[in-house]
Amino acid sequence: MTTRFADKSVLVTGGGSGIGRAIALAFAREGARVAVAGRTAAPLAETVELIEQAGGKAIALTGDVASGEDAARLVRETVERFGGLDVAVNNAGVLGALGPVADIDEAEWRRLFDINVTGTLLAMKHQIGHMRAHGGGAIVNVSSNVGVHKRIPNLGAYAASKAAVTAITRAAALDHIADGVRINTVSPGAVDTPMSGRPGESAEAKAERMRSDVPVGRAGAVTEIAAAVLYLASEEAGYTVGSDLVLDGGSTA
Image 1 (cartoon, rainbow, N blue to C red):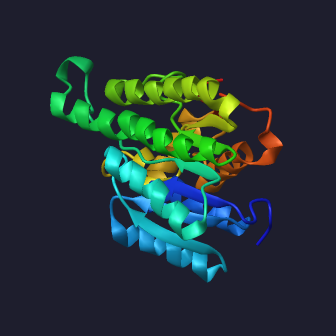
Image 2 (cartoon, rainbow, N blue to C red; image 1 turned 45 degrees about the vertical axis):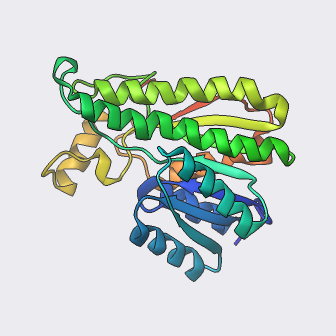
């Protein structure tokens, strides 16, 4: 355990697995009290157990950030349990509405935007509302290199949603830095999680594909994304406002 975030309260959405779990664990290792949020209770409980086994403190909060009521409640319950909210990481997101733009299902499009874009907006709305009334804080949103930086065939809807996340993050950063709320984005490329795999693809086949697709020759580790998030949330990044930190092994260099 280290102390960079000692006595800080952190809310991580989408914290039940993958990047979100790694972020929650990393904050806890550095002394934070962590509220891990998501739509499904069981994986959140697993993240909390891992944190507690390592000597950290965490709680699990179920909710859907696409609901304004839930987004407000997640902030409220974090504050009630931990006494405040110093850092928020908005990682909740889905990959969906796959296929050529002309064939995108309208219901899938709306679901994708409800979670990825509206969910990020509503989460920030309530997080900022608390932070600006209590001395400020830091927010890091998780976007993607697919969007502003890169397009991939059949991922048009996802790219549009993540481009919107990047845009609303930078707008919020300008709007609220005077309130003491510092907001930034990370945009990962392929990361070693199930989302970066193809249907039926083995671990060996995925590794071989990464060697040819990614200039660095591999997928990113969830711990590498977490380290970048913690930097942006820390006092060391106090002059970093509205940035979009791309973490993709050179894929968009």
